[in-house]
Amino acid sequence: MSCICSISSISSFSALSSSSRKSVPKPSIVHCSLPGTVVEPKAASVAEPLLLNAVRGEDVERPPVWLMRQAGRYMKSYQIICEKYPSFRERSENVDLVVEISLQPWNVFKPDGVILFSDILTPLSGMNIPFDIVKGKGPVIFNPLRTATDVDQVREFVPEESVPYVGESLTILRKEVDNKAAVLGFVGAPFTLASYVVEGGSSKHFSKIKRLAFSEPKVLHALLQKFAISMAKYIQYQADNGAQAVQIFDSWATELSPVDFEEFSLPYLKQIVNTVRETHPTLPLILYASGSGGLLERLALTGVDVVSLDWTVDMAEGRRRLGPDMAVQGNVDPGVLFGSKEFITNRINDVVRKAGKGKHILNLGHGIVVGTPEENVAHFFEIAKGIRY
Image (cartoon, rainbow, N blue to C red; front, side):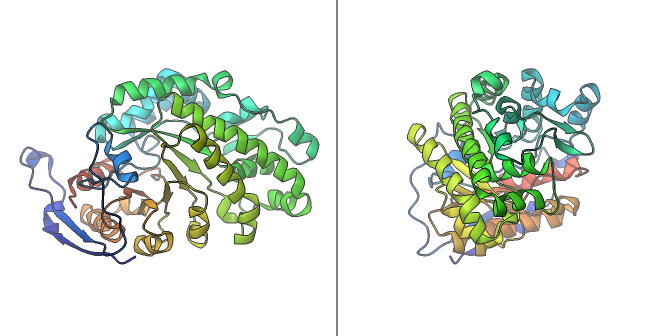
């Protein structure tokens, strides 16, 4: 897909000093021409959040913006909560804390998406897979699954029984945000969840799950099937309780070769999408996989509404490869937020130019990195929300 854009008055995108915020200059205008590639946009629904309108191809004045891990360790307000509640699971499984943490970036930056503060491993306890998230170490699976007997012990996930705090939190968030932004839920994809529970936690080489995949594929397929059924239910549950879009994280699927992705990830992602479509046909589904440049076309085959690109893929190239009907998300390098405000501005403009008008959610290509200056995040949102097509 070709994208020819011009940006006028780029200098006006420069950061506003605290003393000059009362006199805000007119935002720069981003003009995009995408001949022969984008369907004529529909009229936007005023009642719907900007993010939903953009995903559905409606006419929007700018790309909606939110950031992965926008609620988290870079925020001083979150660090204060961590001092009082040092356990991640306590913070992510307590309704009051989940709501407070989820709303921290909303209260400060007003992003167009407010994502639930949780973790992709949250459902594991309800599936009879004990785990914890240890500070400085990450996820720890106490009894890694390696055999058919282990997989037989995995229970189907019933979210309303196992994680009622997720539904309660989403319901409160929906009321608090009041449709001024889209409330986002998220789940882990089957292969990524399987990677954690087979490896016993995070991994560098994924040797244990690949050994299982290539020596006893039936065992892995049985586990993946349980996760596919359960995650479809989890998405439906989140949507029923207030989530207006749901992101599926298949972070580790890109450790697979294309042929293995087609066997161990793609069918289960399709199954989840198809199951959710039966009950929630208009719910936008976003798919993210880090390092996905070699699998983009295959990600589109899942049937999701949005493919989130990581920063290693040029946005214009990603658009061409995915085609005009697929909405995209991303894909500024999170490291850019350590740069100068001018540098951040230029990188935002570059991504927006290459994405073109419509069906684009501005985001990072991964989550915000610990230690990122909050003032740079504020600048990111200020510039992003000042863009006009």
